[in-house]
Length: 408
Image (spheres, rainbow, N blue to C red):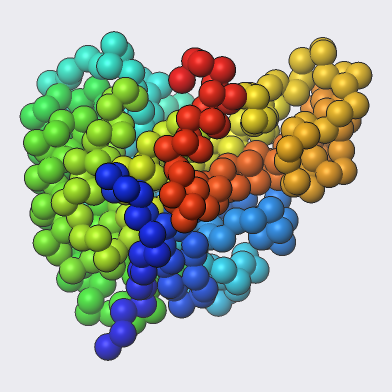
């Protein structure tokens, strides 16, 4: 029986793990490396699916946790699945919901995310510190061997995700590529807890794979296993060996990293994962990190940063980020980025977009989101072209020299 997902490598980076390839899915092909646009609730905020496609996005990722709570995976089944429900004809992905256990549990009160600077790392004996909310004076999330018990951030109702439940929900949503249920720990968690969570993730991976293979959905949805292990080399390598030994269709690299060591950590993992299956680096969207991920062998990336930054008025340009709400842009009638060919830059000025934000007009978020997503999607597409032309390291040096101005 043919696999629902296949991957072909077209060109490799000399002396590095980077590669350009093609992922084939039931709903189209993805030229890699590629940036995956995040459409959390079956929508990319402020944009229509047609706009997302026109700006160059190849694939959209939706969020299992959020779609389960609202509108409910049963509603997506009634609506014909994710593609039909949101009117997106290209490839799709869903995450497992495991990251929400992290963001609403271990790291909820710490203001930390996927990356942390080494000077900010402090070990904890227990990486599961909980916090009360105004919804109910109870913990939002509790991790057990069986799964994760959590309370809805919408109404405080109690729910329980097992590995099997996560896969069932993702089957109902109907994305082309889905992820095994994992526990994503805080960057501040101790070595002991990172290992405990990693071992549990491996056991959950086996349960996800078993449940998936018993379903007819395995014929049309590819299941990716997730590598964990935090910032520790021995744990990362152990996790990569374990997950690689399982019959997944692709792999996700999850968890938290030291900002300074992310590139090395991704390389540790990808040196052990099979070459003939795609690798997705979860939750990474900073340009320098995207370059590092590509050179270290990752094929796909997703992050909410481009649209989140856009809604706050922060825009990418080749010369670095700008805050379009600053007074200096009020009478600047040039385009946001003279080198950009996106719809926003072709048709609107810095002055106009600045006016929209200062006036509180919704169109500002739309035009800014189109630009930021186009910028990041094109940047990763340009990395692919640089691999094909054998000059990715040179392209990185040139881009980062302008974008960070020597600050990278």
